[in-house]
Length: 269
Image 1 (cartoon, rainbow, N blue to C red):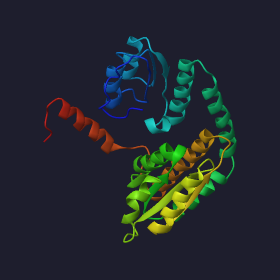
Image 2 (image 1 turned 30 degrees about the vertical axis):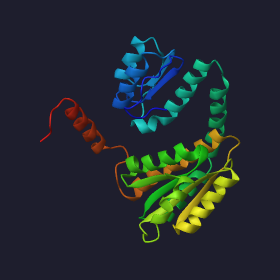
Image 3 (image 1 turned 90 degrees about the vertical axis):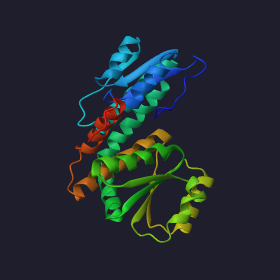
């Protein structure tokens, strides 16, 4: 998993490269693709129109094209599906994509019930005007991080993410004198006893006000998808409560422009 600029070129060419970018213009993805594609034995790309798609076609990569979403983050279902599809193709096995499709059917049925909306409204009410600190463990760690980023992008609010049990070794010391933060603790039915003990100890010792949300599914992927839906809905609900535009992200556009200016050696005024 590479999400920055500092990945060294592997010594061996015995690896497959999967590059994912909805826009096809994410700078760190482009730079790492140019480097890692040099030796990769197999290459697959999931992308919209952009430089990444052009590079993929020039390399003869396996390509799945996405598009049509209001913003890249709303294209997550497409990105996930096609990433599983190309992964299944690269390894010559159908079970990863099949498992995702089975989970998606259950998720669609679950989303037609009133439960997701009611749970979202409850969590938003619990959170109130405090800043969310999202905690997750094991397979729900990437989902917890998405909760944080969706609140940032959709609701335009500060939000933070931390991992348990690691937070028991440091962060637990910091909460005694603050009331501006509220913990959202994501739990899964596959968590080990030791993980659950760590969560219990952290909540008790930190004194943080909190809501614990347990997501149950027959597989870890199903639990991850259920948790993702609630996190996305929560971010939109918070945007609605704060009367902000869910789609617009002008500061992200500004960051990209400033980054390009820096790389070109042009200092902005």
